[in-house]
Image (cartoon, rainbow, N blue to C red; front, side, top):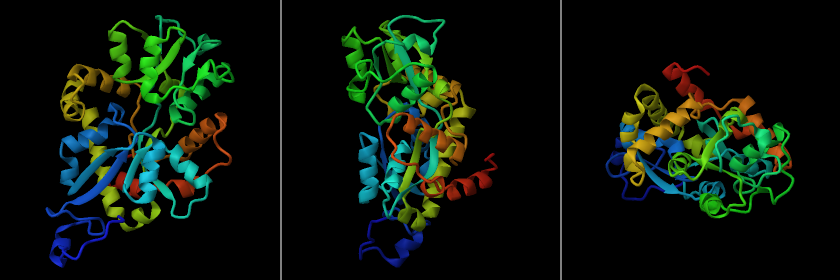
Length: 338
């Protein structure tokens, strides 16, 4: 961690901190500054780890901040104002392609599919992606993984995305639902849960497809840190991932209603019923990674998606951008398949 220990920190207090290369609080816990790309139930294992005390068990205190976009999260990581960034791996890939020296490294994966659902104006029980030919679609911000994954899915099904008036990336992510709601010229948009299900419950639209199921396994969201931070704080990173993995296991070992109760403190404006429905929908599409290690096949699939969108000038080296050393050690410790 880039924080300097002050003169007031004594040798005795350092001994209280089991992960002494990271910053130690007065209570002996290791502080990890985590910047998330957005606040979403899609990242449920992380919040369960926080709310259920799994980080406390690892003697870690999480200082969580919302970066409001992968670019801003990456800026926080590179500048040293955040230790770990939760964001799409594309941000790390861009840094590697640009040849940064103290480069960010992906050391753990959280989600393995796109978490968005395609919402239309009408029910389509016999939906086919070819139905979107010639339709006006709100896709998300240009260069973002949601828009790029949707573009890849459409192109794979023979739907052109060349017309920016139809494959529309002009609306900011947080304004997409409101724009779709008020502009009847838009035929489809994508929404994450619980927004999608809540929108349907209001009778305003219909979920017609899962982008994640159609897009295949993609390392959609991952934890990245500067290589220099990981070199000094490997034990902290391992303990961090162990807590998150416990959060995922809790989700698979309990019913959705029980899981929802562990998430309410992180989503106080969302009903337990909506949270539970979201958990079920994401488990049904196998959205969360079973192991924190990122496979080279999935990493290359993401770069296929990025190349298809025209955002890559060259490919990043998997062995440089991804370091599974910590994730693999944790998988071996816990008996996970990898």
